[in-house]
Image 1: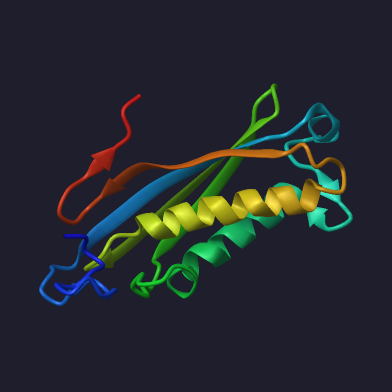
Image 2: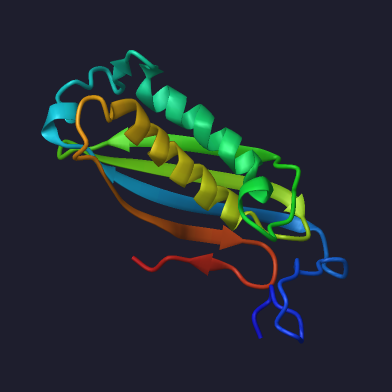
Length: 157
């Protein structure tokens, strides 16, 4: 049975009332591919468009989104996020790596918050750069690691 369905297959929030509060962490990553037309305009690690500094704005948007995950994803528990960091780096080929790391002491994990933060940061990069090119590709979003709770997970290399 899926955890978000009851015995009659109706949607439900997972009952975490009997779980123990532990430290929960998660790390998610999204890759955005920028075309040459956009990549060539980046200087000193960021691009400034009419909307502002692209990566700096994406970091703020991603953190804001991670904090509001329960408002965006049905059946996610609202949690008091204790830590959320977003790191953004671009390689020479124009691949932008967005890493979102989240942490909380809670009865439920924070992987959805990390995935949401990385995703919204990527969408913000797209939004801020779309005036330069629509050839931007958001390639993948995936969970890299989660710790705490029933079982840990680490993506195999």
